Every structure is written in structure tokens, then in C-alpha cells.
Image (cartoon, rainbow, N blue to C red):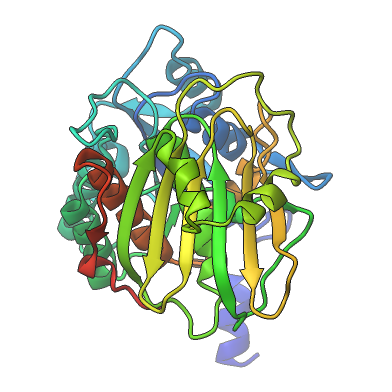
Length: 386
């Protein structure tokens, strides 16, 4: 027997023994609050237990090792879920990432910084501590001398400067990163994928409910479609947010096209509400290459997220519903799948981090416009190409 054969034989398990299975990746989840139908619930329920997509069941491919929870409301789920699944709730982000030790001890981090009781800024967006959580994560990475994949739910920060710092830090430290809304990942009814290089003349998206929390989803789904146009993404030149009856007067003046809204509304899946709970809003977007875009937040017209576009040379608008299965939330399975893939491969997939940065800026500067009398705001900060 050669030395190589001898060493190979020595490496084999003894008769009746099996080699230990590879360790499953462990993840830490940093939560604002965990209660029924919160983002923590619809994400973690699938990460802990698995999910179904398109009739196929998927078992978890990573183990949730730790929670950090900022708030415990009366309908808190974090404590019972932690006990059920053997997850430790740590009092600090640092301990959650290090599993009580001194060095990074997990293979992935999910920052679910939505929901909970936090004040709003003067412009009206909630001071969710996503950027603060991210900074705490980065401090552990720097001390440990290595990074792990990170998922940041929705947009980056409630101030533009912090959002840009978050993006720059991810790029500088080469953190495998997943971010943004679930909407670009969900089903489209009817199916609609714009071909790369499409020549767009105008695009429009429709959302409902709270302007800051829900219009953001429409901004990002619109961006996921607009970025496919000829020449790729060039960035946004200026933004304005208009509210009330002026929204409809904009259409009369041709600043957005009523036929695009009509085409979008025809794609509704859920019945619209009986009456509006708030006045309409329009976030107008002018891209640096001349593309005209509008996000309409129309609480009394839809409970679906909708999209419509005018393509050069086609007299008929294209339109679809980005379907989210109200009250069931199965579309969150797509984001859980993306996060698991990120943890397992260390390679970001979809969506682009630049998409979320640009969508974050559109929302924040749009809210600034509303605060400043609904005027146009020039946005050289959003000259973001990808």
C-alpha cells in the first residue's frame, strides 16, 4: 500500500460510522418588533419553518441562531417563537452576532427594520433604526476581521446622508448584500418582463395606504422596470411630490398620462376599497436621460401594486399587477429564498443595491418636496448609473 493510499484509508470513517454532516449556516436576525403580520413575522415564519412557492414546498436551508429585538409589544411573538425554535434572544446586536462571544459567529445577518413604535421625521418618514443596526453590524465585522452576508429589509435609512454611507460601506467592505422591497421579486399578473434595451417613453406605478411605507414599494418596482431601458440606468435629475386635487390637474396638463393609469387599474386583482382614507399623492420623477415617471399613491382606487408603461412605437400601454397575495404574504417566500441563496453562496443576486439606493433617494427627496411646498427638487445626488 502506498503512503497516499494509507493516508486516504486513514481519512475514511470506521466501519459502522458515518462522516458528520456539514454544518448548516447560522444566521442572526435583528428585529424592530415581531408581531402578527409584521415584516418580522412574514419573513421569519418562512425562514424558521419553510415556505411554499408556486405549489412547491421548500424547507429551511439555514438555522436561525439568534434574535435581537428592539421592542416587545403586547402581541409580541419573538419570545414564544424563540422558545419554540431554540433561538436565543440576546440583549445587544453585538451579542446576537457573536452568539455571546467576542467574535462574529454567524454566517448571515437579516436586518428587519420595519414596524414598531418610532417617531416620524419632519418630512413624514418613520425613524426606523435600520442604519443604526447596520452600523452595529459593521463594528462587529471590523473587530472580527471578516464580513458575513447581510439582508436589509426595504430602504436604507430615513436620512439621505446615512443611506449613502450605508451603500458606500457595503461597497468598501465588499459585504455580500441583499436589500430592498419584495415587490420586484413577486408575481406579475399578467407576466410582464421588459426586454433589455427597451425604448420607454413614460412609466407609471400605483400604490396605496401610507405614502412613506407603501409608495416606497411602488418606487422600487417602477425602478426595477425602468432600469431595463435602452442605455441602462442614468440616474434621476429631479423629483416632486404633489398631493390633493392637484394630482388630477397634473394629468389634465399632460404631466402624467391618464391612459397609463387606466391601463394599470384594469390589472387589479383585489377589489378596490369602498372609499378613500386619504388624499391622493403623485411623486413625479424626471430621469437624467429624459424618461418621465410617476408614482401615484391612490388609497381609494386599489389594494394592489400596479405598473404601466408606454413603449416607443406601441400605441397600447403595457400594464401588470405586482401581486402580493393580501393577508397571505406568500410572496415573501421569494425574499427568503434570495436570502438563503446569499448566505449559502456569498454572492448577491437580485435586486441591485444601486436600485435600492436610487429608490431610497427618490422617496426621501419626494418627501422633502412635499414638505417644501410641493416644488421640484434638483437631485444631483441621484446621478447613479448602473
